[in-house]
Picture 1 (cartoon, helix red, strand yellow):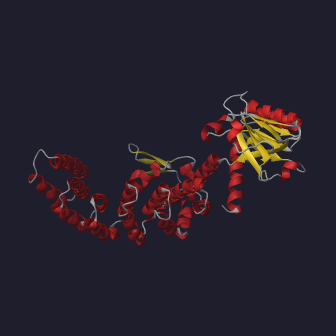
Picture 2: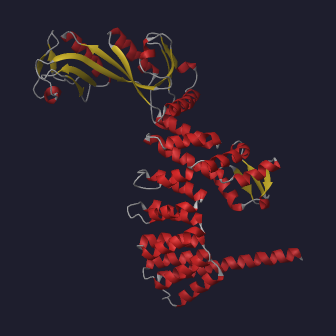
Picture 3: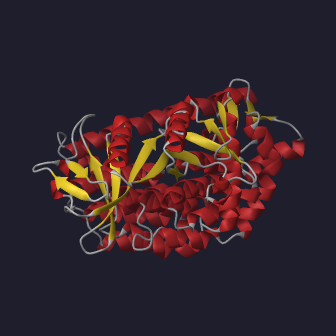
Length: 491
């Protein structure tokens, strides 16, 4: 992640942290180390399963200013390095470390003269590590069978430090650790960790803004090496692309300068997608679509800019790159990129989508998603799908048949009918029947009726066909009744 990306996200993350962190009662000003820390409250703790205190402020002129710490970081451990000069120093340091965490790190010089570190952990307080040292801070005895026996330590090794890492969950933990280490004149440092859950939430929040300005940010995170952030960035970009394709719908609201319009003036498919995305509500009885406040209301002012940004950015090539398993190991990122291509519907990626569909090492879900994306592209994908069916195994045949049924049209229908006549696999025949039924024109239904006559009435395919034809007849009856009512109204 570049410095520009990191600094922008840190600002966002810090604001999120301090929004959730609560009031000044959860703050502590550490005048010794020059820090103001703040408790990470239960809201963030519950959301992202992390504990600790957040560095709210680093005071000017204090030693912590040069320690590499950053405001907004989470302190998970306070670390005290106690220099060992005598046996008493060692005993006190080990006792203190074992009191809270039952572990410590020993820094010593090995028999080869190299400086080494070894962690020791016991099950419960009071267990003996099995090391004793003399007043020259050298190991004088390692008890047989003790924890230290297999650690690489040898008698005569010089002990340099006992390093005590105290876990920090609350401000009280922080105060206690700093006070204890200061009293023993230990060198104090911190272990910090990124609030990755907050960063992910920040990316999700940026995507929900539906602002053209965040598109480049999503792309940068998707192309970064931070594995934890790439997936939410891909999903965020997927959402932004989906939103951009609703521009025509939202321009109708914008041009009318209203948040409500009659449903019968709007594209029903776009309405459904906007409702799924939480941008508006649909009331069929009132024949009214209403933009949700603030998401939908704000988006009608932003949709044109977002559409223009998506259209002018090489997102197609980016998505095309990351649908390839050999390039992108994360299947959720591959899936998001397939969704992006499905919304943008570029003819140029048909061959790449066929390659994903035919990849026997790809997951079945991603392969099916590639077929669905080809369905969204439509007619340009028909011939490649027909070719793929002819040379594929049962998995490829099922996906391509379903995709051809979704696309429809004379060419797809004729191919499906031909495949049905020649196919012997029962599962594939069911898929072909379902695909032909999706097309649903008179020719398709007649072919299915003829197919039914040639089947054993007790077979699974016959039962499935019967259900499809009954449903089709019911649909025709409802449509005929609606047409009659419309005719009577006209009279």
